[in-house]
Length: 139
Image 1 (cartoon, rainbow, N blue to C red):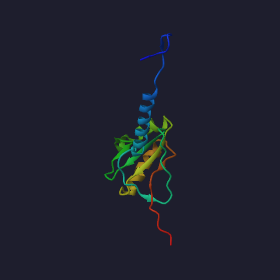
Image 2: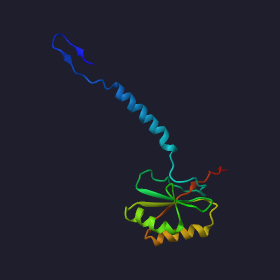
Image 3: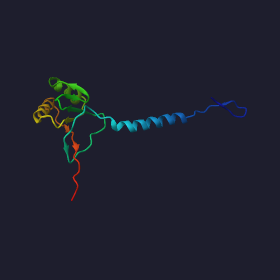
Image 4: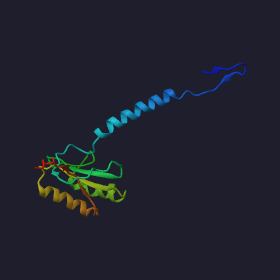
């Protein structure tokens, strides 16, 4: 649609208001849904006093062990026998960070066994994920 001005013909203008409206709606939707997206599977994490938040970039993978002892890389289920190969491909070659999330009911021996596979894949640095413990009231 054009506007007529005097006798010069059509004036070409772009109306950006609808574009800005759509972009603001998309921004609000993204801001509301982004905190709800978590990586990996549902795990009841152990609690500790000092916890830093997990980085939100795409430069890391999360290895999760759920209460049944099933192992997941992000949200993809991986068998214990395949774990070392997947870790070498996904983390070592792509230079990504690895974070371990284990359900608090998983036996310590199972967590150590998975950590041994991580070490065997040549990964020396790994983060362990936990939840922050509730603060006790000071007296």
